[in-house]
Image 1 (cartoon, helix red, strand yellow):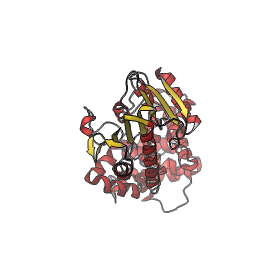
Image 2 (cartoon, one colour):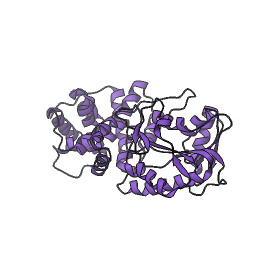
Image 3 (cartoon, one colour):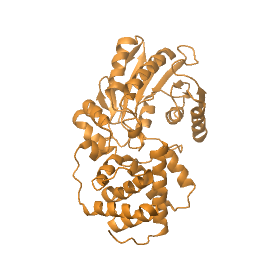
Image 4 (spheres, one colour):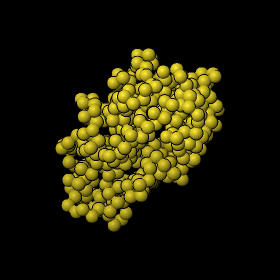
Amino acid sequence: MGRIVSVNESGLESRRLAIDALVRIDEDGAYANLVLSKILDESTLETRDRGFVTELVYGTTRMRRALDYVVDRFIVRDDIEARVRACLRTGAYQLVFLGTPAHAAVDATVAATPKRARGFVNAILRKVAASGAVEWPTDAIRLSYPNWMIDRLAADLGDRAVPVLEAMNSPAVVHTRSDGYRQDPASQAVAELVDSGAGRFVLDLCAAPGGKATHIAGRGATVIGMDLHAHRAGLIADAAELTGTTTLAVVGDGLAPPFPEQSFDAVLVDAPCSGLGSLRRRADARWRMQVGSVDTLATLQFDLLASAGALVKRGGQVVFSTCTLTDAESVEIDDRAVAEIADLEIVPMEEWAGDVAWEPHGRGGRLLPDIFAGDGMSAFVYRRR
């Protein structure tokens, strides 16, 4: 067992805060972005240390399955309490994925561990440090995804699946628009597809938190941003205030919208989805989504698209998008649209892709995060006959 030495206060506090956040995420079901924001707001850490906490929380959450494999090779008991497990994962993340020197990673993590478990955590992490390169038994463990997610994306993406999954394990880059709103480039690319400009009246059917709605309004259109829940409609109003755009926040059900038919020049349906293209930004999403959710969400997505088709004027436009990479939530929705929504006709991708790296995907297009510096995204553009 190695010697335990003192560590600097900021490094110790950073690891303690990260461990606190991980326990809340794993035990209480807290969302990583929300719990991290609260913890950092209440801390007195400097910018560099805040960045380190963020890396530890998001990285450890993202690579949880791989980290458990790394440490469990040396554990013979199965009664590891949540905080001790969080300490082991945090230490292993520093050793295996951050390349932190062993003396710094182990000593600082052990110092942040409850006293009763320090000897145990110290012993396990020193074994991890001495074990050398990890031999991963499967891609699912190496890449740290649930088996079903790996299998589903492999079936839909083929040889592209592993590069895409690897890309979504890298940290997300923050992109800020000229109006001050932070928005992923893929979401901006979708908003650019919507016909907008002065005099245009546009509905964003599932608009919260308001990024796409305000982006569209920023190009001159009058936009109604709708959401089913009042607190989320409030986020749309906040985004409109931040950006200074003509975006009206409305509470309403996209399946029974409170508007007459043919009210809008264009409707955006950025539908609720499994989010399997945005896992780079949502560290804990891979552990929240369940295998049956994809097909349940696909049913909702089609119904929202059908609803949007009735709201747009003759000759108007409907844009359907999902930040996921499953066929069930993209090309199969379009196949149903062809068969069941008589008023909508597809607009070929060649007419709307522009300079963005959209790849053909059935009759629409998609952005894959191993090529495009943003979320994975699928999009289909329709015109009402």
